[in-house]
Image (cartoon, rainbow, N blue to C red; front, side):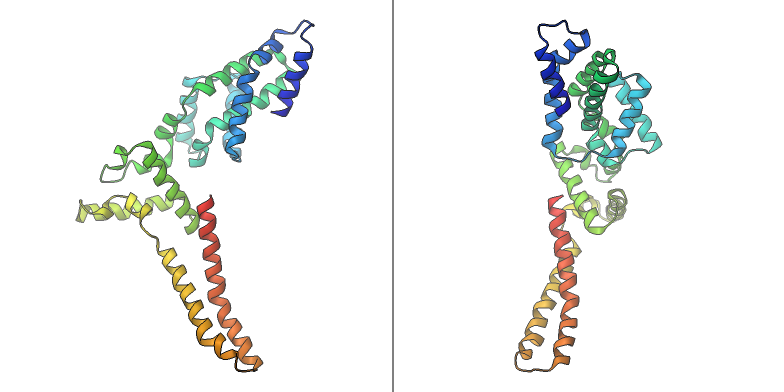
Length: 272
């Protein structure tokens, strides 16, 4: 973004000179480049390398031409090849924007004739809604749609996104992938649906919103720590035995370590 801004300032200074047509394109569309670039910066998200590299490959194949039909074909082929994951679909638009802005800068240096094509593609990307692609080709979305009650497909986007955020947090806490964790929940919900279709546990969302066992485990360990403090540490205040002090410290280290570990993981999961 800074490089593009620097280029535009230099072009403005050349207003009395004759500008190349591609330079005029760059000046006339700088507002678009700036707004799309700032949108990425506001997100403060590290774009997945996978989506950026695939976007580069697509632009190489199409000579920098992008439109909705090409994007649809791109996501369909990526889905069939299983080459993208859930986070790639979430950041696909930002990835394409970042790649196009970078290419515009390179084109200004090496091949200014490519600038109009790149800016036209950036315009298409800026007005294209990527959400339908995610709904149609995202593995997580398609897996959610197989839940037995049929309630998920009736939910609005806000509710669906809430379930996906909960799934992401729980997957991080469980140190597993979102896809495998969702498969586990779906298998459990389908078994429940066969025995009791009206049960809350027959809907996969129940497992994403219900309290998790990991939290209970944390509180049990924390309670053990408090109990240890009362039973062991307090009597130590009346004795000078080094062995008792060492053994007590080792005994306390286990629940303290486990409790701290779970507490840090839980706090981290709330922030991501």
